[in-house]
Length: 144
Image 1: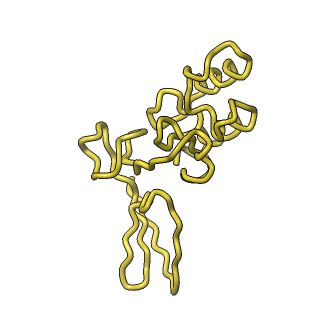
Image 2 (image 1 turned 45 degrees about the vertical axis):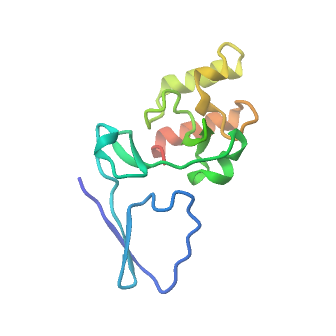
């Protein structure tokens, strides 16, 4: 299924850290937001993107674990190894699944180390209940 959205505007200002994560095109005063290209491997994706969750998503760099809230998209990404990743996506495949929520609970309870899910910590202050809430939102909404 291919969906496209068109928005007409007189003035637009964007401070998007991902530059063009919506694959948008501007023409004649209108913005067309195209769907992200489908993929099964990184070599199918345009430069500056990578294959995650079977679609080409922008690669967004970040400075440190505390920078996720300010440098990553939608307040739903954490900074992991200087790259923005979906909160709760323990295996970094572009999707959050129920078993990854379980891993996050184990981290909170001290039964697993943070290294079991580096993307569990949204703001670099340790895994907390609000991180699980963000991860559940990422299950429901999909990763940004």
